[in-house]
Amino acid sequence: MPRRSSRQPNHYVGEWFGQRIYPEVQLGDASLEAMRTHLCPFLTDAVGEAQACIKATPSQGVCTITSKDARRYGVDEGSIDWLVCPYRTLDHGLLNEVARHLFDGAVDADALIVAAVTLDEPATRSRIRAALAAGAPAFAYFRARLGGEISLSPTDRSPEFSFDITMVELLPGSGDPEIGRYAIVEVQTMEFHGSYGQATTALRNALDLHQSGFADQVGENPEWAGREIQGPSIADTFKRTFYQMIFKFQLGLHANCAGTVLALPRAVWNSWQPHLGGPQLQVDPRDRTLRSLPRPDGVGLTEEATAWILVFDTDQTAGVSPNPLVIDLMIETDTPTLLHHAFDVAPEAAFGAGATERLYADICSKMVGWWPELRRAACSG
Image 1 (tube, rainbow, N blue to C red):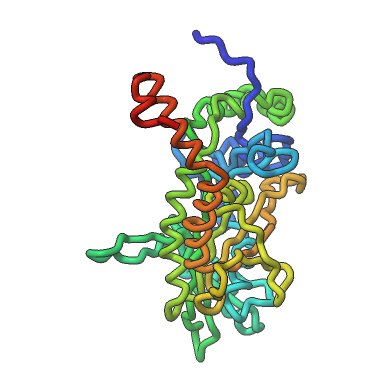
Image 2: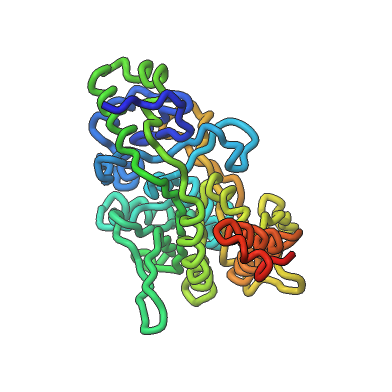
C-alpha cells in the first residue's frame, strides 16, 4: 500500500451536506442525521420536503471546498470558500437581492420567492395570493430539478444557452396572478482538478465508525476532509463563463427581460481580477452600497442597468449549519464594459513594462539551448 503523504492539505471539504466541518466544525442537532441520510438542505427547503443530494458518490454532499491559505487567492488572512455545487446558492437572501435590483416592485420589500415546481400546490398558490394582496412582491424561479432549466434556442449562427436560474415576477390580476417579466441568474461555481473521492470516502467511514462522536473526531482529524484534493481550475472556469455572460448580459436589454445577474462567490471574483485587469470599482453616487466597473473613456451604459455581478460569500462565523450566504458587492456593468476590461485593460497590463521583450528572449534562450548556432541568426541581441 502506498504511504500517505504527511504534508498538510491546502484544500478541504468545507461544507458536507450543507454542514460546516472545516475550518471549524459547526454541527447542530440535526446535522448528523442530514449527513447519514444524504440530505440536501437547500433542495429540501426549496420544495418543502426531504430531498437527497443528487451528486455521484465521489462528490456526494460536497457543497464548498475551503482553501486554507487564502492569501494566494486575494484574501489577507484566514480561509476562503469555493462553491462547487450550484444548489448551494438556493438562498432566499441571494435571490431577494436579485429581485431588489432587477424588479421595480421589490426595491424595499422582502419578496416571496418559490420554486416553480411548487406552483401546482394549493399551499403555494395561497401564499402567493396573500403576498400580492398585501402589496408584497412575489416570484417563481426555474432551475434544474425545480421546474427545469429555461433555454435560449440555437440558430444556424448562434449556440443554445441554458440559464441556471430564471426568475419570473408574479403580478396581481383580476383573478389569478399574472405573469410579468423574467430575469436570468447565472451562478458560477468553481471546478477543481482531480476528484474529492478520497476525502468523501474518509468522511463516510468516519461517520460510520464514530456515530455521535463524529464532530469531535473530524475536528481532531481535519486531514480526512482534505485527502488528495487538488487546486481550483481558475483559468478554465473564467474562459467557460465569460463567453456565456457576453451573450446573457445582452439578453437583459430585450423586452420582457428585467436583466441578468452573474452570482460569483467571493473566491471566484478574486480569481477573476487578473483576467479583467484588476479593475478599481467605482462607487455609484445614486446608492453608495453599489459599485460599477470603470467604463472606457466617454462610454456610458448601453441602457438602464440590466447587467449585474453579485459577489457573495459564506458566513463561516455564523456558528450554525448551513452557514448563511452574505452579499459582499453588487456591481453594475454591461457587455461593452466587460469586453473592455478583458480584451483591452488586461492585455495592456500583460504586454507592458518589457514583458513582450522578455517573452521573446525566453523563446530565444530555449531554442539556443538546443541549437547554439541559432544565436547569430535569430537572436543576435
